[in-house]
Image (tube, rainbow, N blue to C red; front, side):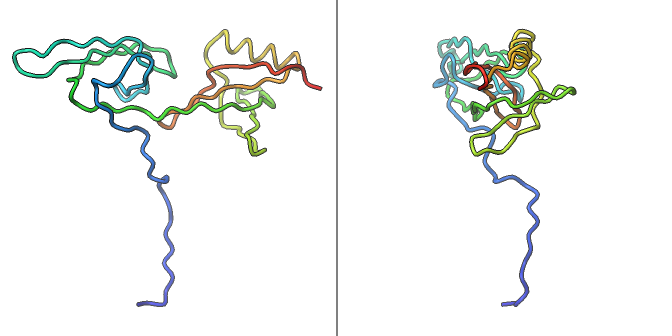
Length: 160
């Protein structure tokens, strides 16, 4: 054995997959699915009967959780589909910068400054007006497949 120490430069993440496989026939309405490489929430599932050549098919209608676009996919029910790992985290809003980024307080007391304001107009005006009024706001951040976006807002009362 050599006495040299080996130094490895880590250029990858922990290797945790952004998705996991799930059989198409077991995915239900309000579940999540990856269609055309985008994480989506399923709004409608219909299953066709087995045809002359075997497989029953599942027809998924889903909405992209980040941009709201409607996507559709048809998959044999016995085949596996990718399902994204979707996380929702609440952060307290500290500040809104002029360039449209928000400063958020994490649970362990650190700040998270890499998120932009949402593109959804009503949510955007709610956040801005609530912040200008000096309210204590908590934003819900949805993250999936390496993307993050503010998706909801809670008012926890005025600042003391």
